[in-house]
Length: 153
Ligand code: CUA
Image 1 (cartoon, helix red, strand yellow):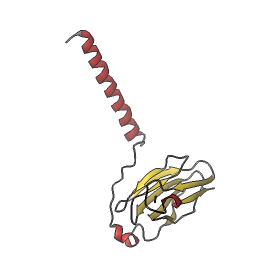
Image 2 (image 1 turned 90 degrees about the vertical axis):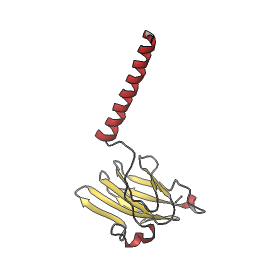
Image 3 (image 1 turned 120 degrees about the vertical axis):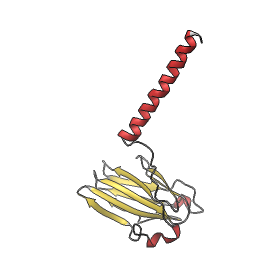
Image 4 (image 1 turned 135 degrees about the vertical axis):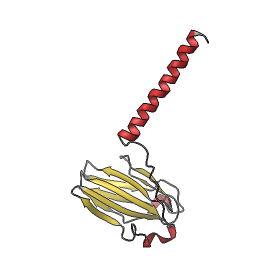
């Protein structure tokens, strides 16, 4: 092998290794990986599920809240949420029918909510305001009307 070939090979493998270290660090040390939660349930029996029998906002710590939510064509249940500014909010969601989306434009919240799966995503709203929540997965005739709000105060 020529010297220059060796050099380029070393440089390219080195770059790959550096990228893998950076991505590994972000994913595992900084928890910046995409949501990969895997927990399943029977989509026909969401209402009877221990977790989803009473959807709503619940305080679980001094500054920590849990939002349990079910999505269905074409609504977020419950909708028009209210959470305190600066609090850590854990969204726990599932769909009762087809695949829906849960996106809050202007934040990092963007999750796919599938029937049969429990989706979890956490966020801290550091600014007060009214945030729009939209479904960003085409779910049927009422898809474009599927939205709600989160009021942070
Ligand atoms: Cu639900 Cu689109």
